[in-house]
Amino acid sequence: MIELVIPARQKDLGGFEVGRVLPFPTHRMVGPFIFLDHMGPADFAPGTGIDVRPHPHIGLSTVTYLFEGEIYHRDNLGSSLAIRPGEVNWMTAGKGIVHSERTTEGQLDHPRKMHGLQAWVALPNEAEEVDPAFDHYGPDALPTYEGGGMWARLIAGTAFGAEAKVKTHSPLFYIHWALEPGAKVSMPSGHSERAAFVVSGEVEVDGRVLPQGQMAVFSKDSQPVLTARTQAVVAALGGEPVGQRFIWWNLVSSSHERIEQAKADWAAGRMTLPPGDDHDFIPLPDEPPPPKPEPMS
Image 1 (cartoon, rainbow, N blue to C red):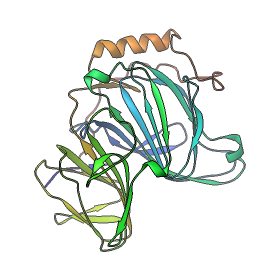
Image 2 (spheres, one colour):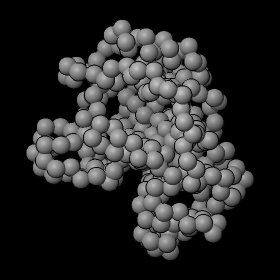
Image 3 (cartoon, rainbow, N blue to C red):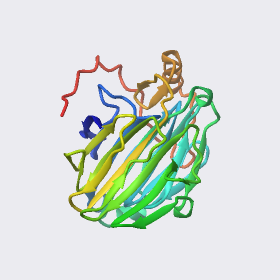
């Protein structure tokens, strides 16, 4: 039933640590999901916060979803707004977009908590070069359900006969579950690839205990049932594969040559910076050494 358990690995994003779940060396994607970071939970003292300078993306959609806190988004389409818990920022990079994620000055004045998830969804071949777009969705666009010690929100896609109003480019699902001890939830059927990430607490599935920070990837024809051993929060995600993808830094594509072109465009300043946040940017990284295998759990 469980094909693989993936542990979140700690990554420093310049003073802010995240748990990097995807990509994993032996299992890079789940459906179209090619990247998943667990942000926090973290406590920020006054004067400190999120400070991700403008940077580019191609070939993907970024999906930001918060449990606590606030992040301010700006992009070179002119989008400028804060995302708060229960909302979704769905930014489609397509042929190229530049954005920043920061803590606003007003938020810096007092201590704050930050907890959330950021996922990248690889675009299918026919949508890799679409015009960039940014969509912000409030809670009313995201169906919820409650019963049996379980509360659920469908962040995106389709599951259990419900459909979120979030515009996607390929079949997928993305669910936020909040579970009381003893509550049981079944993974949705009808999707080729499925996984569940334990955001907090502890759950059991198929006789295996999954603590906070672990993702279980399930076999295609299984019918997994998750049981909460403690109060828990779980993110379930998956969908249909979109084919092989290359990933380098913030760039995703089915073509290695397309990534090289995006690197050249960023290095040459051919991608504009966000209005109101154009005084700084993240430079193109040096070419990384060949990746080393990461330990399996």
